[in-house]
Image (tube, one colour):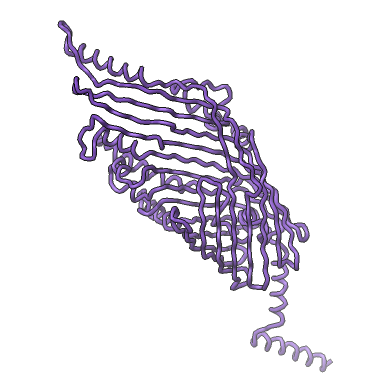
Length: 528
């Protein structure tokens, strides 16, 4: 049997988790913004040129994993807990956002373009108090590793939150000034499907030395709050930690039963909702220059409501040091066993597992995203430009300024790339790359990422049969989707022009053949 090494197992588990998140794969999608004939571009800028007379997006997925520390810091050594202990920050947060675009349909009617779609956003975030990791690693030891009988530890930064939001949107675009100006507007109906917050109001462990006995008394103070809506099955009894079960979680139970229809209905409905509007425009003052502006999440009202389930787990326990007493006639085994039972019973009686009813609330703010772009077209559809994006009112707010480019290689192939510089100290710069392939008129596929270096490193390691990520990795993004695209009549006009030009401009060799044919025809007529 191989020896069990807890640190190695933890390291491999973390590495595997980070790797798996990149395989599956927010309203802002760097990969599809500015990507020609992509439904995701129109969803972000209602005034973008659709380039199609009809499109249907079958599905699209974007996944963003964000960490407050780099992978190099977390996996600096095989001792994961020591790595957390060595972090300079007090907390570590790990968040993941996934957007699933189930459907988008768009159709051109004259100078107008109508489109509608549905998307589901899933967000999860876990915050670890690094002092708790140090306590698990070192216990009640001081900086030198010696037992501190007057230890004091506070872990109240521990938290977790989850949200599931569904959005249905409708959009209208109008092109005017001979298609030099496109103006669009969207309306989003955002429904809060499910959410949960676990907050730590208090969580501390303090030790005080008993000079009379030479032992210590440990005081554990804890107060946790749970707020949840749409997470647990209706009628679920939850009065104790012992009653927590995965089978009571609604999406898990639906999956376990194979009820796909019920799962779709669950993910596309909600008890609380709000409406937001967005707008977008694209203006071409000259033939080779495009100016774009779009905003979404406007006129949003914050959702605040009482949670369907509200619980508190709190208490305060004093645990005296372990003592051992043996009476006359006791065997060694029975005496030790009795002492251990008394000690563990004291701990169990002191720390409660009861979940008490408590009034709790949940809230949701619709993210607001602003995009501004200036593009220079160096060919009819290829461009090089500057792109500014700002996102706020979300779990992961950011501001980026970047250089963005798309290379049009015909209707069947488009390549896109860019470099984005973070405008704050909380985020890293991003390198974006995307490719879109039109395999047939009914199958158009794209894939992209804004963390090119990180995904490339992971892919290289997988090819070599290993699991690994870059030391500087703190976020991983991937976006992909499949759609149907029928281009509008401008491309038919282009084909007609090419045919006319082919007739008007013959090569010298072909021109000689035409002249010879004319002479032969004229000679035959003269002989008649």
